[in-house]
Length: 343
Image (spheres, rainbow, N blue to C red):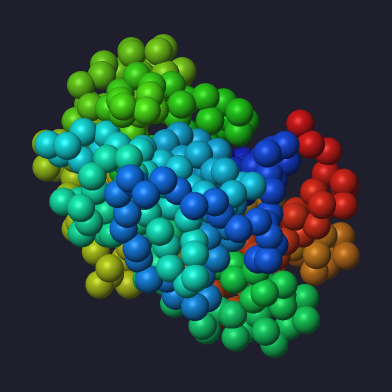
């Protein structure tokens, strides 16, 4: 099955731009509100975080945080999420940052789930990504020192590759509000319910059990429905081995090609999955990239794609994040100065 049609703008850009314009967007200063103490009855897990980690910078790095099963409490700096575990069901967890570590809490007993939960959270927050080299490059440029100060450079991910792939497919050829609606309807229709009322992101078997027409009509997925169902069915049948497809031993080019085996994932989707895997040495050229380069680097002048890409060669294997951080902080400054109208 071919990939879904490429979006006019990149998936991550659409998510970022609309999320920053969201009225609930708050970028907390590091000296902002202290988190309140939670009830002593909460089951708790702590995870050491890298010294260059910022929870808020990671969460608001792009628009995933406004889609279920995430819920971001910006005022308290707490990320809420529903996660489903085999034999346990769906549980709500909260994640906050305190004194150099992540504190994960739930009203349910998470002690038996500690190792699995650690693995999922490390993926969600890219805790294994080393940013020292990227921040060193930023530190050499006055225009990028805010990136280092904000400890920016990690992208919020789903707890599984399946979740990220489905969400990326949902961004193609549509407006951001419709993407959020599709994902919300999918979670409500297929996700396992928790005691708190929220639902987890559905596992492949739950999506595969839905008919294509149900995905198309009930979840408003339109032409994306057969891709999402084929992705889920391929994983359930074993035809698509996600561990093999996302093999970290592959080179970036090999991994780029490997991700394209996923139904609905074309060059744009594959490039974004690379970034969410911590691989930033490839930039997906789209209309937004061209507009950004002309605006920021060329004073409105025209240039070929290769000439534009050459401007980011100095970033080495951090090309995409070099570009993404420029775009993110430019948009953030517009939002904070009132230059971008909020909806």
